Length: 417
Image 1 (cartoon, rainbow, N blue to C red):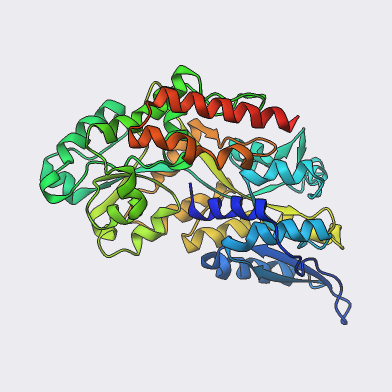
Image 2: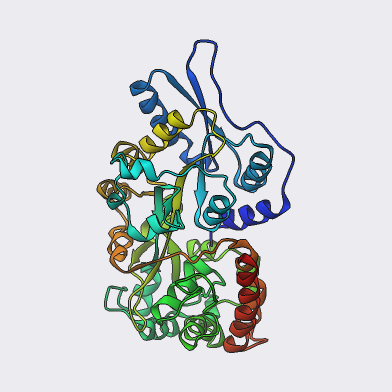
């Protein structure tokens, strides 16, 4: 899971003092809107989008509020409580149902019904993340899937063929053994304790699920789900992955960037990082995820939402609609930072880093599964690393840790009502 997401989860729980949020009207008579985001790397693209919107809507002025990820949800919680949330803001899957269920978001179903937003323009699994009880609350902004990154230099040295769409779990295991060189401190793969990047994918590939389709029960105690977890714990047990402690001391992505890990399950957001690293920009590439019992990949991404307390809801909705347009998607794609959610804009992202086969991330869309969420995702998701961790260290087998997680998760889901 992205580091900012875990910080966001902590922020939502802790709360904070209120801060300035929504917009109003200026002395010139213009409607003033506030737009809160958390990624400084996307600030230039977001400002370009705002400038484009303002050019076609001269009566509206939009100010971007850049709030660091470590503070974002803390401030949002305080703003929502005080009734002064920003007019439009980013939201992610784990927080969407929580904010929608608590009346913090303006329904956007009219934008869909009146044809101003066509949900067919976005990946279906992403659209569903931002719908609650049949009402659409978020307009997809961007998305991410996960691919198999590999070190071409290490593969060549070991005489291992590069990954392609014929690879299976067994192919990964066989390759990892050949690529591991204990004398050089090189491991075949990094079996990271991470949901979105790792075990959410293999759970789905095994035919399991984290949360039931109706959102009422955990799937962690299901045999297929346990198999998806054990894929990773076996890699550590077999000595072809660094230990959990090693991967805690040094981020696994950094191990990959330094040539100490030959394979790494990385999100599409890793592409720009690897393109800017002197080692990986010439020695790495990416392929689709290997197949388990079937093909699957966890899909996540952000959406733009409108505050239920926006002082100018009509204008705020117009801005949110523009943020979900092809024009806005094209601007995002050119930066390479994210894959825009608008389907007709994603090729530009692929071409932004031609040294990598980024088409792999788009090829997975046909079998993408939604990122697992519930009404209060934080209540159970932030416990996953703690409860499942003993299976990664070898202190528990995967089945026992998974059943422990299922019990905790089911208790949390019952409290959601």
